[in-house]
Length: 375
Ligand SMILES: Cc1ncc(COP(=O)(O)O)c(C=O)c1O
Image 1 (cartoon, rainbow, N blue to C red):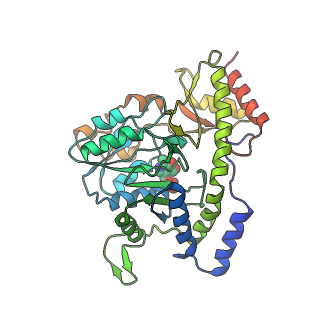
Image 2: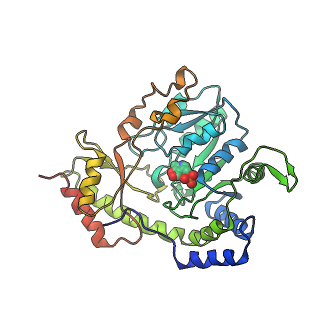
Image 3: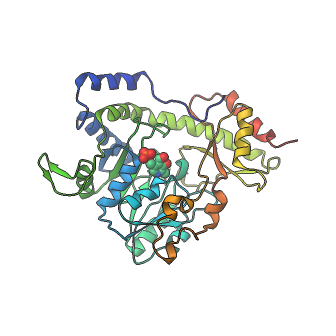
């Protein structure tokens, strides 16, 4: 079976972990501190605050901007659920906007249409290693005086006009869940140039603590442990190398599939905006044939020894968690239908593109995709 992803951890992560175990210091130690400094440097922000998930990073970011009950936050309808549930955790209202059909990322026109007097923030999601159209999004944010929180959970090292995503908003959030570009086991981090945001988030992740005996605000236990940070430090050193291999494999697959365009009519490859360095968290393909379902593609490829990754089956507003939260007429999630989100959901998938694939594996994937629906 050609797996869609494989473990990216090895002996060096183990050695780093061993040191922490033997030291007995599991929280608030030098690994977290060094990892934060290194990650901020890698992304190009002044500060980073490590937490225990990407979702915690989003929640802390929303809180750090002073968002309150009833404030609206615009988020794309195609993403992982917590891009939007983090908004609920902060007591705010997720307002779903549509995505572009070509690159599956936030559609700036739909974003602007959804702005109201209550809009306080936007969460552009850099989907599957791609990048949103940040120039347009920043222009809109400035026009309406709205803050940007970038969701970079799927885009470690992705660049837009030569600059890393994660440097365009007030604050940006990354996930280190096991299948991401790099992992800490579980974990997340938020990056910012704003010292107040950094200080707020440091306290927010640690029970709202100022010092051992003073809790001046509501907080959570969102701390990253020394164990996770020790893995992260080793992983970060490998990140560029892993990304380069994934990019190389993805471009090889996508270029060759594009060349068969006249022969294969049932799918289209993603068309990212030109000015980006795409890190291909997935190697993204969209089924355009109405007659072909994702399950059919998955099963057929599985029978031929190829595993794929398919997300997201529904636009987020169709999930019960949001359907049960409808606040007012224009946020009646039960009635909402966003054209492109409806077209894309249940129709996009990722081909294997991990760093251990050989040319013969890639050629086999290309050939198999070419013949998948031939009689
Ligand atoms: C786009 C996006 N946002 C947020 C998250 C949440 O990250 P975590 O699973 O670390 O909480 C993920 C994780 O899959 C994600 O893909």
